[in-house]
Length: 258
Ligand SMILES: NC(=O)c1ccc[n+]([C@@H]2O[C@H](COP(=O)([O-])OP(=O)(O)OC[C@H]3O[C@@H](n4cnc5c(N)ncnc54)[C@H](OP(=O)(O)O)[C@@H]3O)[C@@H](O)[C@H]2O)c1
Image 1 (cartoon, rainbow, N blue to C red):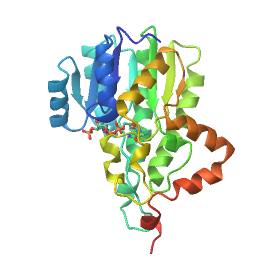
Image 2 (image 1 turned 45 degrees about the vertical axis):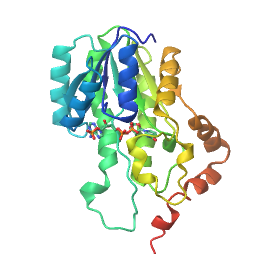
Image 3 (image 1 turned 135 degrees about the vertical axis):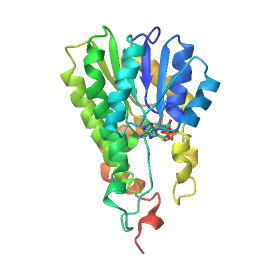
Image 4 (image 1 turned 45 degrees about the horizontal axis):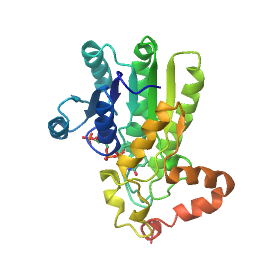
């Protein structure tokens, strides 16, 4: 798919992958719209990238999504690409008490968010000529990281949904991409830096990762596995138990329940 002259909505564009996607896609000659919850961060992003368009919107709130759709489509009727990028990842020790509302946060943001965004924007995308949806999943969709059990469930769910969506849309002009991202140096990982067994050296630079994602989209690779995600893909097929055991070493002390 040609990444020039499109109108692209990116959820969660104020840092990490979303910000990197936004800057590169603007450089390539696209109109870019980003969302986020924090207005101050959105305004700071606009200062860095004056050509960007910002909307405050929480992807875990269906009313926010309905309102976002009305505003974006009224102002940018040429919208033809949706990038479901917004996401959160927490360390969760399942031995500890948490409220039932709190425990499912990542499901609401990382899984229900993209499903609702697609549901809301799909009729518009289908009427846009050449269109695309890209869902950002994770290497953790291929092999769980036990320290982040709800996150892993959200990304495995999003991967499954994305595969079904691609089949259901195969006779339309909407292409469905999945970016299976490996660990990268973004603010999302700051809270893991001090965790026992976590090696920050494995983190990929977001610049390199998004460059590979853009090349993948341009070549119509519907599943994109940058850096270590390619290795996780192979390992999850040939040695899934070994891989799970290795992943379980991250934060082992914290999860022991002692
Ligand atoms: N970094 C990694 O190692 C890695 C690896 C694999 C996959 N991923 C996935 O890549 C995506 C981007 O992650 P990142 O590393 O770039 O994280 P990040 O730097 O923390 O950025 C997350 C972005 O999402 C926004 N966001 C969070 N919750 C939101 C919500 N409910 N509604 C709207 N926007 C929201 C944040 O802004 P506000 O807080 O202001 O809302 C921010 O702009 C996520 O889906 C993540 O799971 C990351």
